[in-house]
Length: 421
Picture 1: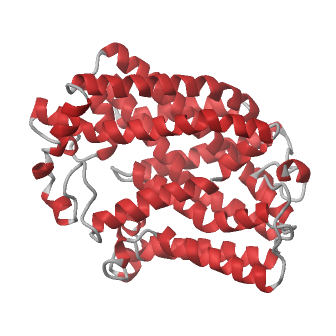
Picture 2 (picture 1 turned 120 degrees about the horizontal axis):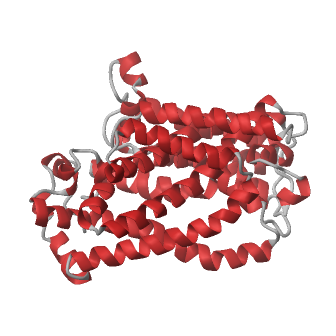
C-alpha cells in the first residue's frame, strides 16, 4: 500500500520517498550495487557447478554459458513478465526437490536407516572440523565453539534474519495487487520455502552416507574439498539419468527465478537510483536493459574471482548486509506514521559501516575472502576468538536498530502507521 501510494519503483526509490531524502535513495542504491553481486555470483557458481558435473564441460565454460542464458532471459523480459514465469518455475522446483528427497531416502534404505547411518558416522568428522567443535552431522556443534558460532550467527541468524530485508523481495511485494493477494501467497510460499531449504539441508547431509557406503569417504572428500560441488556430484553419480535431467531443469528454474529479480534490482538501482536519479525512473527500456547487462557482467567477474566452497558464505554475506543496513529503516518506514530522516540516515550508515568493518577486519571467514585485513595489517582478524567467529550481523544489526530507535523516539516522531503493509 505504501509503495503504491508513493508510486515507488525500486527499493531505494521507496526509501527515498518515504523519508523524502535523496541521500537514502543514493546510499541504498550504492549498498545494493556493492553487496548484491556477492549473492548473484553465488547463484551463478551453483548453477555452473551442476552444469559442469552434468555435461562434463569446464567450470569456466559452464559459468559463462549459464550467465549468457540468464542474461538473455533477464534483459529481454521485464520484471512482471519474469514473475509470471516464476509461477511455472516454482512448480518445477517443488516437483524436482520433492523427487530428490524421496529418491535419496529410497536410495539409502528409508528415513530411519538413512538417519541412523548418518548419526553413526560421527567418528568420521574430519580432524579440522572436530577441533572446531563439530561432533557429527545430526548434532549441534559444541556450544561456544568456532563452528557453533558460524552455524548460529552466520547461517541461522545471518540468513534467517537477512531474508527479511532483501531489496529484490521487497520490490516483488510492491507489485502485489492488494493485501489479500499477499495473504493467499503465504499459504503457498510457506510450505514452498520449507521444501526448498529443508530438502537441500537434509539431502546435503545425507550425501555423506551415500559416498561412505559406495566410495568409503565422506562428501567433502568425494568433492575434492569443494563443498559447492557435493550435491551436483551426488545427483550425477547416485541417481538415474532421467532424474539428472529433471534436476538440471529444476536448478535452472530456481537459479533463473532468483537471478532475474536480483539483476533487475541491481540494474534499476544503477540506472534509476544513481545515474538517472531525479528524472523519471523509467528513462527508457534500453537504459534499464543496459544497467541489467552491466551488473550481469560485474556478477560474472565476481564469480570468477571467488574461491571454492563460497556459496553459503557469499549468501550469508549479502543477507547479513541487507539486514544490518536496511531492516531497521525499512521496519520504521512501514510501521511509523512519521519516520525521521535523521534517524534513518544514521541507522543506515551505522549498520552498513559496522557490517563492512566487521566483515573486512574481524570475522575470519569473511576477512579471508576479501584479503584486505591481511594485506594492510598482516593479520586476517584484528580481534581474537570468539569475536573472530561472530558474524557481522550480530554486531551491526543491534547497533543499527538502537541508533534509529533512540533518534526516532528522542525526536518524538514514531507513531504506528495505520494499515501499514
